[in-house]
Amino acid sequence: YISMNIKTVAAQTFSDSIYSMNGISKKAVEEHMVLYQGYIKKYNEIQEKLAGLTDADYEAANQTYSLIRELKVELTFAYGGYMNHNIYFGHLGGKGGEPTGALMEQIVKDFGSFEAYKKDMKATGIAARGWVWTAWNYLEDRLFNYIGDAQNTFPVWGCLPIVAMDTYEHAYFMDFGSARAKYIDAFFENMNWSVAEGTFKMVKM
Ligand code: FE
Image 1 (cartoon, rainbow, N blue to C red):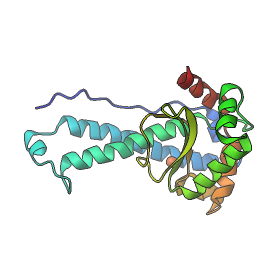
Image 2 (tube, rainbow, N blue to C red):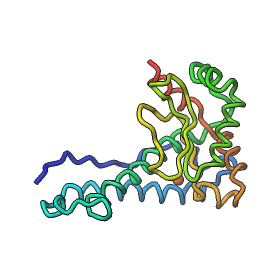
Image 3 (cartoon, helix red, strand yellow):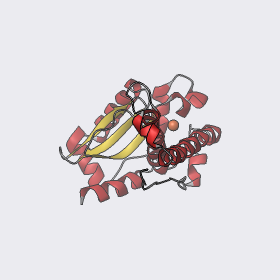
Image 4 (cartoon, rainbow, N blue to C red):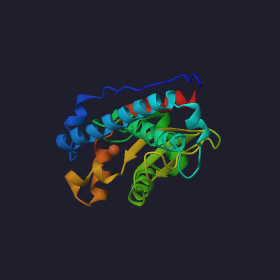
């Protein structure tokens, strides 16, 4: 018997302004929140299942199929779903515009201009099947727009996400149909850059 330190997660509180955005409807955000709650519920359920693994379960470990494999793989999906949406909803509900201060300076340094950064974000978002993250890479000392196809693909080590843009169909189909580019424009129009600036402050210093 392994006495694992079990951690559960709880829903974060987001600004009420995420329910009154331009372009991204209240209904779409409410439905999106149902999915968010689902990731939390499943993460916590997986935690309990891991705590209850028996010696027989451990002995049955197998890369093709085994309980420990399924729990540990889906844990990353559930936790990704939780963390990605914490960032996403955390910095939405703002007035768009451009970041200021150190974050803006770093964007200009790493992309040339804010317009160039947005162009790269937009193209990466069109090319993604799930997420785009603007992340600070501690080893490379730069911001980079990473692509993700699912909640648990493809984060890289040594990075901290500053901006998370959901490009799953569930994020935009209700409001924009298949016009993902228009949704990405709306995402930027509703960004609260002060939140991203705050995260970047913690990272850099
Ligand atoms: Fe989502």
